[in-house]
Length: 65
Image (cartoon, rainbow, N blue to C red; front, top):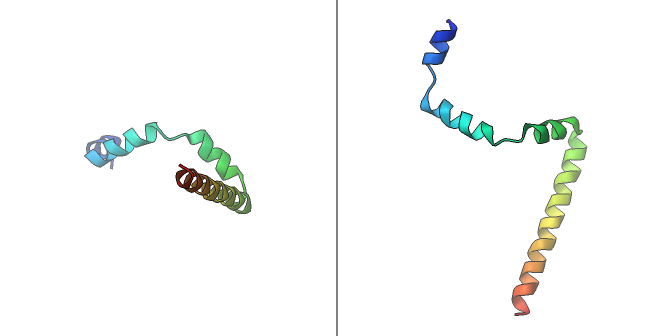
């Protein structure tokens, strides 16, 4: 298969994927991949804790209105 054969086999889905890839922050992905699995998991848990606190604050604000 030549390069021209590959190019002609692109689908409209490939174009959609290319559009989405434009907006992906690859530097952030690289930074995350430098972390160990444990470090990524700890970061995820910290995010989930923040989310719980944010939800609780929102619920509290709604009940105090």
